[in-house]
Amino acid sequence: MLQDLHRRAYALVRLALFNEQRRMPLRRDDISKKVLGSKSRRFADILMLAQATLRKTFGMELVELHRSQVVEEKTEKDPKKKQKQNTDAVGMKKKAAPTGTKTWILRTVLDPQLISLAVLPDDDIKAVEQAPLVGGPDNGADNDNDDAGVQSTNTGAILAWQDSDQLSAIGILYVVLALVLVHGRALGDGDLRRILKRLRIPLSADVPLNSRSTAQSTIDAYLAQCARQGYLERHRVGQAKVGADKKRGRAPAGTQRGAGGEDEGDTWEWKWGPRAMAEIGEADMARFVAEFMVDSSMMGEEDDDGEARAVNEARRKKKLETMMKGVERASGGDLVDVAVVHT
Image (tube, rainbow, N blue to C red):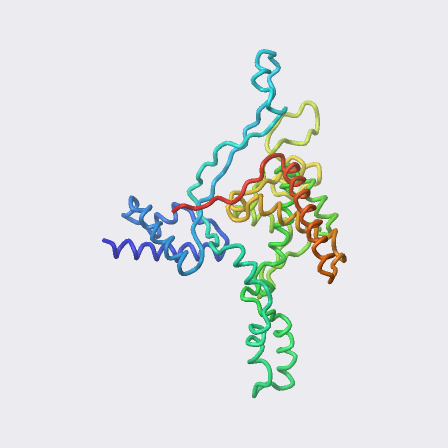
C-alpha cells in the first residue's frame, strides 16, 4: 500500500514538472486521471509525499491557486444607515476570502536571500567556467570567435539568470503587472495599449519567448498566453456606447479578440491572475517598482567615500519607504504578499 502511494507521488512530481515547463497550471482533473486513478480518496497523502520530494530534490513546492473576489460597497443614501458606514469610503472595494481553484503551480522554496547571493558574480566560479575554453587542444581560430561569445555570458554566478529562458517576455509581464497594480489593480485595455506605446512597446512588436530558439510572439498574443497561464485576467467592464438606443450585448468580434481600436479596448480591463498572486505577490512587485524608481533617480550619486556612501544609503532607504507608501496608495489598499503553503 505504501509503495503504491510513493509510486503515485512520483507520478505527480513528474506531471507537475511537465506542466511547469509549459507554465501551465496543474488541474485536479488531470491529477485524478493521470495519477490518482482508484486512489482519489488518498489525494492528501499522495500530495504530501509529492511535496516532500519536490522540496528536497528540486527546491520547489506545489501551491494551489486562489481566486479572490472583490465586493463593491456603495454608500447608502439612507441617513439611518450612514452611521454604520462612517468608516467606509465611497465605492470602497473589499476583498472577500480567497476561494480555491483546484489548480496548482510549482513555486520555489529557496530563501530570497540565498537567491540574491546566488546571482552575485564570483571570480573563482568564473575561472572554472572559462577553464575548458582557454588554451584547449582544439582551440583553433574558428573556435576563438565561438568561445569569445560564450565567455562573454559567463558571470561566475551560481544562478546564471542572463542565460535563462524568456527574459524579455518576463520583463514585459512584470511591466504589465506593475502598471495594473499602480492603477488600482485594474487597468483598461485601451490605457494599457497607450502606455505600452509610450514605452516604445507597440502591440505588433515581437516578443522572444526562448533564448535558445527563434520563436517569437506579438504583444497581443503574449498577453493572451499570460492569461491562459494565469498571470493575467481580462474582464469585460462594459460596452462602448454607439447610440442611445443600443442595448447591451456581446462585444464586437474585434473587441473580443483584443484587436479592436482604442474605444473598443476600453470596454475591457486587465487584472492580476491567481498565478501572479501566488508566484510574485503584490508586496514584492511594489518593492520591485520602488527600487527601480529610486535607483533610477539616484543614478550617478555613488561615492567611494564611506561617510558619503552611508548618507546616500540612508537617503535611498527613506526614498524607498516613501515610494512603497505611494505604490500602496496607488493600488487602492493593503498590499498582499504570496501565500505560505502548510502542506
